[in-house]
Image (cartoon, rainbow, N blue to C red; front, side, top):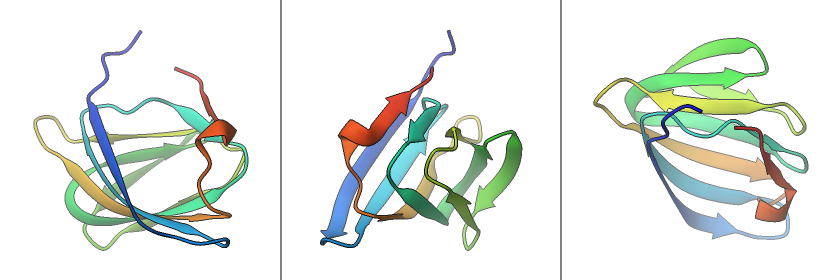
Length: 102
């Protein structure tokens, strides 16, 4: 089992159409599937990687990636650094719709 880092999420806005959150990760995050929401992640600080399905994306300030609903994904900051992102989920994020793979 991989060693996981820290993951902090703060909801900035939510209505019946979307959730906007500020996310900061340090290290490796769990691989999950959001069965209900498609989420757009925009890097606002730091640097890291987002693995969506089997495709690896580098994510740094200004970069945008999209994790479609139903597709496994995880993210990871560069070693010893943090990755700071804004996430927009449509429909709104619902933790009950998220499955952790590892």
